[in-house]
Length: 220
Image (cartoon, rainbow, N blue to C red; front, top):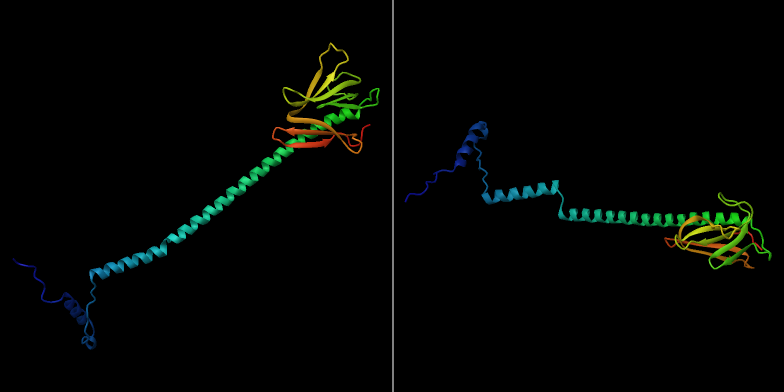
């Protein structure tokens, strides 16, 4: 069985001789040793080189985790701020709507109170439960002329605050005008040292309750 014949001389010797021949005469006595490397050494060098290149051009696992954590924290803080601002804006909108509804309703009642006519006992208004009864000369579009008996109350069907005029003729139907949106609660009350200041309390569908004075000064 014949084996593979190995060369009798090292190929590196021939390369070294060629290099010596190309050198000047005074340098040809130098001895050249060819540089050779084992396969394992070459492979290790390639792996080290590749790792160095990756570390220069890419990110380490720690850097990726740190960047992900910071991004998540910033995103969470942003959404939390947006949610807080949305809730604050919604609460402000509900309060402004309640104020507008109460102010509009109170302004309409004040117009009637400013032109009330006292009854035989000198009373300008009377509260019966959740109703406010008075006689006024105030004229709104569609009202009959002259003094009229007015009842301010909450409608049982729509829950809106309505202004109902009781005609002098008992056979005639009442004139009812809604002056507010749907309300959960409408309440009239008195305040002041002598209980002569009339107050209006309205609670909107969103649960916002406001109380405003209907008279800037006491009404006897």
